Image (tube, rainbow, N blue to C red; front, top):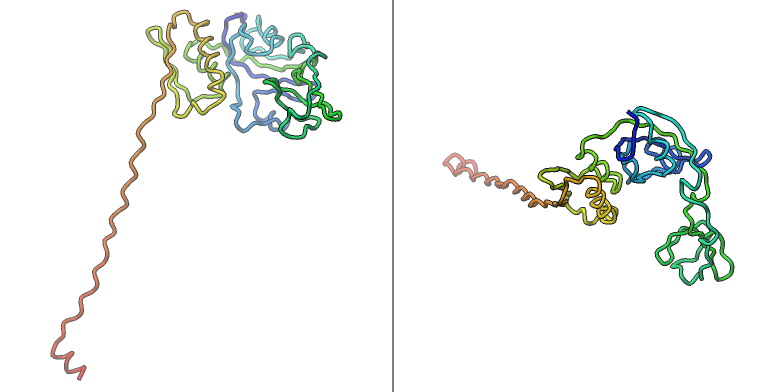
Length: 249
């Protein structure tokens, strides 16, 4: 059956600009291209078609395809990262930087990320466009399967947004419960994206009325007591006998 908006699928893909890979679900491809991130979770991703979890141009290509389909698609800027806008290139005083700006440096100014493209006197020229704005992208892809179970769908969204695969999910009586690992509040990516996750759960599952996030912290195990060391007794002095007296004399 042809895939349509609302379907969840497991997808493998690699995105290129020219011959250079900029995004991939394949760990070996990432290592070969020099973009490997040891903290990233590689492997197929679960996405919901129609929710723009992937680039619009790739999503449009997948809708109407069958499970098992493989192929390539060229994505124009308007369906990728947009056109390169001259108005997003700004001149910024170097006094706004913590360190001396240099060409190619990625910086953040007033909450916006950009790249220094030139330094002229006491001002830096910063391009706030996405690095791939204005570029035609090429994606190769493989649709591995359709994900039907709501629990597996939500686990897929958790991994997509936060990169985590250690959060348990159960759904019962209108409640989706997420079993959180200890210290997850120190995970910045999770804290940023959990609100989006909750919103999508409510949007996609009309029978879920509550989302409960439960973090369980267990009592640390008591350290094992060191085994008691029994000191050996000093050997008793031999009793003095008549024979030992005579030998001493």
